[in-house]
Image 1 (cartoon, rainbow, N blue to C red):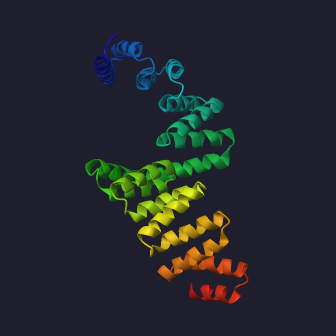
Image 2 (cartoon, helix red, strand yellow):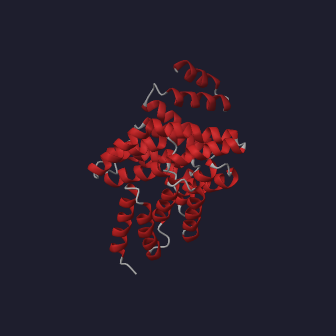
Image 3 (cartoon, rainbow, N blue to C red):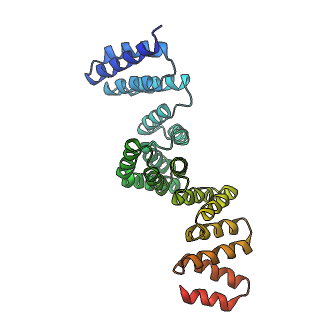
Length: 287
């Protein structure tokens, strides 16, 4: 059996043969790769691409299924087979495969598009439209993602680069990736208050109220005048059922930033709920 370094050379040779349309030679090399590394997803995927280049969709399906038998968790193979099945009208199985691929690897843009279209065809219109809208949002932010990923590679000790990357991920709904980027920023610069505040926001969206409150409190320990953290802490307290603490947090947000309209709005609502009508009206007048 070939050594790992030799297997990599054989695989790269197969890719060269594929690029030169020497499909037989490529398949021969890939057979050796799979013999040494049966669960190597990219080898099975390349075999499927060779068959598709020869307009043999049935053989491509078989190659992808063989790969999934070796590694049933491969998002790459699940996505490729799901897309192929969807194109051939096998919608039910395609939806299942694409859903598993998306759960395993949320960063594969094409899965959102193909799963969205498959769900529309499957009759799940609301979910399908949502995924297609998300795909369009991804495309709009794609260049920014590339720019910030490049910035992180070029400047691995730049906390702002990680923060900016996290902000883009958060805008397009990739909360796990955003959280990882914010955490990387904080490892470099623990005083990066925007990253810590936004990390709290991710916890809040997930209804992880304890970590969210802890994040906002840490921001305010470092900067008691950070109005957004007071406001966000107020929202976390509301969700925790701690209305008295929520009012105090919103009051501090307004004290730190008198122009903070959302905080004044929340205060007005809570004051009215507590029967403090004059104070509610004062907040409404100040907005």
